[in-house]
Image 1 (cartoon, rainbow, N blue to C red):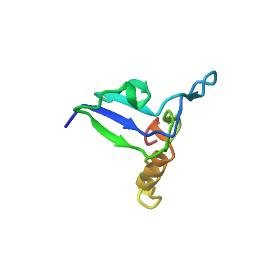
Image 2: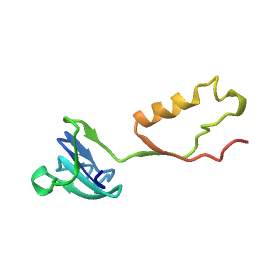
Image 3: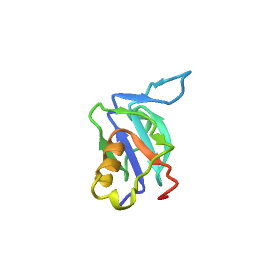
Image 4: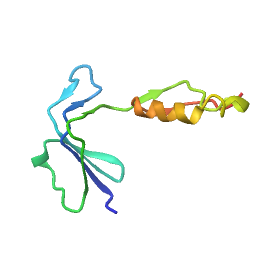
Length: 102
């Protein structure tokens, strides 16, 4: 499996920078899990890379939830915490910071 990933056909790329919030790009390239380039499809060599067509979706920087309690002791299974974490991921949260159980 390639350590290079090229994400193509992006509809909108948000930068996370208030001064320049929307990037003129439709492709993001990565290697070893790190972004190596953002631009247009013609700018990237896809040979040997895993290519993903995201069909016009929006790409945005991940959100960090700086105060979560993903484990709630005996209540964890009843409160369906695993599904809650999965839902957060689908909402754009890529990082959670927790002090753990009390």
